[in-house]
Length: 75
Image 1 (cartoon, rainbow, N blue to C red):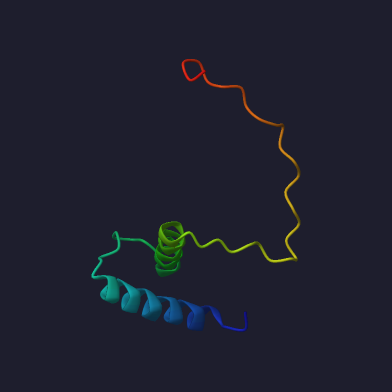
Image 2: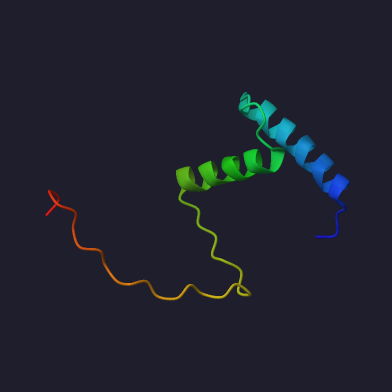
């Protein structure tokens, strides 16, 4: 990514503080800034139905075992 560790940390703190201020939200004590930003982006994507496909360099997941049988009482 081209950033040093301290530059990345500083950028994360600045972004997280700005976003938290814009949202009028206090993140939980001890939550790292990068995790807070990931949570904000995930909430935005979930609310707005935005899905970003994985990068082409990511290998596809192998197929799963197939559909699960219904749980008792759901059938």
